[in-house]
Amino acid sequence: MVPLSWYLALSAVLFTIGVVGVIVQRNVIVLFMCIELMLNAVNLTLVAFSRFLGNATGQLFVFIVMAVAAAEAAVGLAIIISLFRNRETLNVDEADLLKL
Amino acid sequence: MEIIHLLFLAFAALAVVAAFNVILQRNPIYSAIGLIVVLCSLAALFLTLNAQFIAAIQIIVYAGAIMVLFVFVIMLLNVREEEARTDRQKYLKLLAVPLFVALLAEVVVVIRYVNATPPAIPNPNTVSDPATSLGTVESLARGMFTDYVLPFEATSVLILMAIVGAMYLARRESPAEVERIEQALAADSAAETGADGSPHA
Image (cartoon, each protein chain N blue to C red):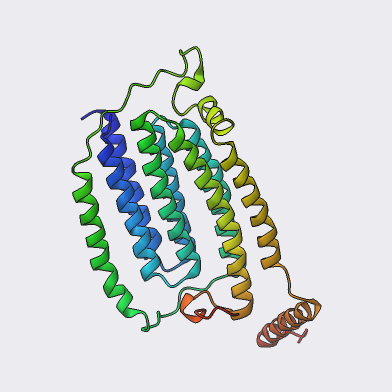
């Protein structure tokens, strides 16, 4: 059996890569993908703890996280489309006001 | 070192390389492909953790539905290659590397003390009640529709709100707006045919 710490380390690395992506990237679609990356890193942690505690609650939580991620993707991409329609850009630096 | 360790290392390396691909590519479509590879290798890792159902859902919902939505939007917006990045946020790039190292170091220090032995899981094919085995559909369903039925219902309300919100946000503003876009498109095509020197212009 692979040790728990390996899974946690991989999850931490993926989460950190997601954070760095949100900091360095300026394309709003890629920012969105980095958020999905972070959600997936957390999912890996939840599933790993679920296995090592012998409890299915962690996997249930992953299920809920996936539903939230799907809802978030739908709303977020709708916001991106409406942003692009109004500003003709995907650069987040050019859309830093709270109004369109 | 057993074969499962090798499998873990292979898929973990694939996931990390693809994750770097997501944040370093300049064209969003390559980032999307990198993210799909991350999702699929994570599904393989879920299989090594007795989470068969979650692994299947990961492929179907994430790689199948959410990423299709992403690729669809990238194609719809027809994004050009990223222009030269603005210098306004340059300090953020300098900040990102130390933050990356600090966060990783913190995590490594914590994880060094993690030491757990997993409990034995009964084989779901031979056990009399599949719900007693971890990761089967039965065990997840039993939890979801008994102890966690309230979060489950709350999720359905959330998805309903997301449907309404997405439709509200993505709709055309007004007939005047539609007319403005149609005129812009007509002007574009007129300019293109004019540039070709075709008789239609």
